[in-house]
Image (cartoon, rainbow, N blue to C red):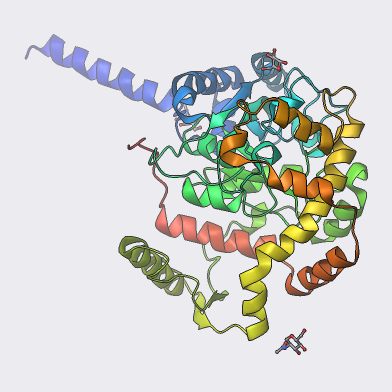
Length: 452
Ligand SMILES: *[C@@H]1O[C@H](CO)[C@@H](O)[C@H](O)[C@H]1NC(C)=O
Ligand SMILES: *[C@@H]1O[C@H](CO)[C@@H](O)[C@H](O)[C@H]1NC(C)=O
Ligand SMILES: *[C@@H]1O[C@H](CO)[C@@H](O)[C@H](O)[C@H]1NC(C)=O
């Protein structure tokens, strides 16, 4: 090889290295990496939005994780970029594209429908409390994720909505992505957004986060405002982050918690749990040390799970012990606890059906405009559109049972007493410490490969 060609090759290699250093890695980008990229000029908010829109265009026809994209997302990103250029003090979510589950209201060109055709065209008075907080933090509202909330609350276990279709699991397309925040979880897993919000009533953040290898935080009820969120029951509904890393989820949580006058009782009550200085301080490598983790008897058994899952489970338990956790297995449960556990869902449903009617009717009657104004209207709408709402497959017994209820009576009160007795405080800082230490020790997350 001549001297010149060698020099040329060296120069090209140097160029390539420089390009790689300046180049921003969009896949798996974390909130911290994005802010670093904004600061060192390797990426702009507009470029991020373009990347995610392209991902959505390519992958959403397969995954059905996104129900709508925001026509104003690029303009919002441009504004964030301009603000940054003027030396505006920017928080961690400034310019970061977020996807909201479609039961979280936004007062913009996006619809808020909980996946139901019945609510298409309804007009909300204002942003949901959590959406308003994200906007105030300078986040870019990228769009809405596909929910399977009450429009298909029939039964709980599907991940389908009339407007968005069926959400698929990006790891194994034939496997369920699990329950109603699966659109957000799948979008996070497949890099369709930087971060997402989901909601949970009964497992809808935890389950899809688990099945899609992402991090979901189900906050204590009232830690995040439910104002402007299409409800199931104020007793259990909660809004939380679903993200690719614990640190990202903590950034989002920090930005959405707090008092909201429109959800005053619950947010007022839970505000006392918000730690001074935010949740970031709990991202500790040694977060498992000294933690006592109890595993109830019969929770993870050969009968319920396969051999592979069981050996992975045992490996992870061993790892937690290695990192200083005290894991206590086979915790016995009292007969009463077992009885309650076995019937928890039925017990819960009694209260939930009465609460659903009350809270949905309140949400619908507060809208500026809506084609449906009550649960009875929704039921009638579904009956009039049996094909679109797949009545044959899913029925709508939850909705019709709920319609038959008449407020909170003696039966509901008995059930609520039991539920109050068995629920205890969860405490986010401890969970975050353990989750972060576990994540850093395992680095278990891989990008999805869309296997059949
Ligand atoms: C800028 O920050 C990103 C991390 O977000 C990094 O990947 C990239 O290499 C950095 N570029 C320069 C020129 O420092
Ligand atoms: C909202 O729904 C209407 C149909 O009623 C549709 O025309 C519009 O494009 C939707 N908005 C977005 C942002 O997709
Ligand atoms: C189990 O429930 C019954 C009926 O509510 C109660 O009388 C009993 O004390 C409970 N037992 C325990 C061990 O909590």
